[in-house]
Length: 300
Image 1 (cartoon, rainbow, N blue to C red):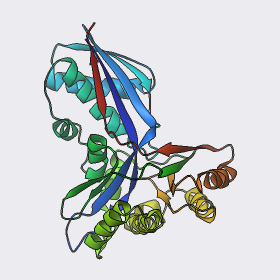
Image 2 (image 1 turned 180 degrees about the vertical axis):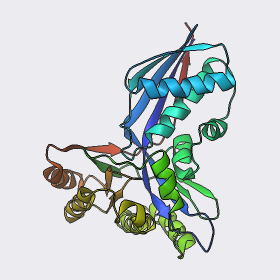
Image 3 (image 1 turned 90 degrees about the vertical axis):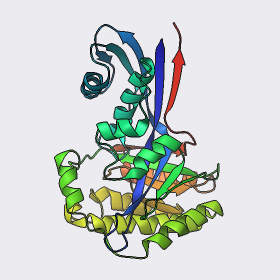
Image 4 (image 1 turned 135 degrees about the vertical axis):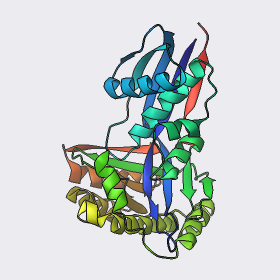
């Protein structure tokens, strides 16, 4: 038996300020590119090949020791998501490994249990739920989760500068502890976003996403030493918005920057952002993924 797992990257569109002392809400969306794809087959030992093989080996080893002792797996990483770039790569690797091994050995382990095992989703549930459900997910400050189908002609132009940051592992934990939760009419903001998308109003949706991004920047300004993790993020956002993007922001800790577009402005936004980033990064347009993580099992 073999298992093929595919997990789309996500853009973390920001946190929604808390009401009083509640937990902030969050927003994330699954995108078609980049994506993670791994294949798994039963084996006497654990072996991993392909990009990011060391990290995936450690994840698989931990999972096997806890859930499937004395069993082996041959894992091939066919496609990988850039690490520490704002795409949720760590969560996608961990859940893909766990779901793949669970399916391979018929362990029937639920995805949220796998997330808890790997310590994923503690900072923001939206990243996990977007992987489970696909599309765009809003986690309201009261804990409710809304999964929304976006119009098929909405897309994101994504810019990835070569710069990287240190906001992962222990540094991320420190930043989350220093987080200023904010006080505001956050529940209205979450509902406003939901209604704007459902009414197919891309201009209003973009404006709300920008507001959420600004609020998120304020929450982490002490850690980032500003609203964004890199100076170029602000330059890219300004260029993309001037070229007609409906909304823009930094995904998670960056450096990935997203621009909400449709076919009317997609080319102009792409060209403007490419001009700024030059040879020091990549720019691509990607559709919103209606699916989350998928598994395909085949018999030998």
